[in-house]
Amino acid sequence: MPPGAPLGLFGGTFDPVHLGHLRLAEEAADSLGLDSVRWIPAGQPAHRAHTDKAPQVTAAQRLEMVRLAIAGNPRFTLDAAEVDAAVPSYTVPTLERLRADPAIGAARPLVLLLGADAFAGLPGWHRWEALLDLAHIAVAHRPGFPIDAASLPPALAALYRARRAESPAALGAAPAGAIVTFAMTQLAISATQIRALLANGRSPRYLLPDAVIAYIQKQLLYSPR
Ligand code: ATP
Image (cartoon, rainbow, N blue to C red; front, side, top):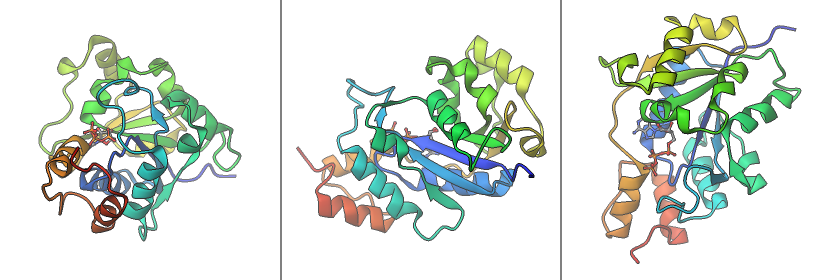
């Protein structure tokens, strides 16, 4: 059986999901020839527990906001398993779970989608060296400003130089192991900014989908304290 076209995987806290996330996934699907993008909201984000970045809303609410944001896009799907697990989310165990799913298996190319900031932080991730055994990595960068190995942490720069593939065709040629980059429209939007606007009673309109804003208002999320 052919292994199938590369499947994009997009994990995040999505607290809340915004247009920067949506454009990253949409542009990745187009430029990398992905069959679809599977959105994987983190359960208890491993990086943020017990910090001031711990989510203020429940995992179920973050999941629902992603569901609303991606509704109607035939290339986007939602994976609720990390939220349902209610334990800290780590990417390597998530990839192992997906590989164990018979619908994916060992041969299907998997492509982990990351913003350039998340990529630079990779050496802080649990078992990060195992990532490329399980998936490819695709890093979104600012148009005209490719990822510069010299500005990465040394261990990551070495991996980047060793595994970098120039063409997205590399993603279909193997189940895992390559690092590619793709340019995306710059949108200086962050969930932090949106939470701050809402906490100050200011409008977040046009930074995230209207359906998500309506949900936030109905559920009284991120409201002024
Ligand atoms: P926060 O502001 O709470 O840190 P965030 O907006 O960075 O959140 P995350 O859920 O932490 O959102 O990010 C998920 C992924 O989306 C990461 O890989 C991150 O690099 C990427 N990302 C987030 N915002 C943007 C953006 N505006 N443009 C491109 N990539 C983004």
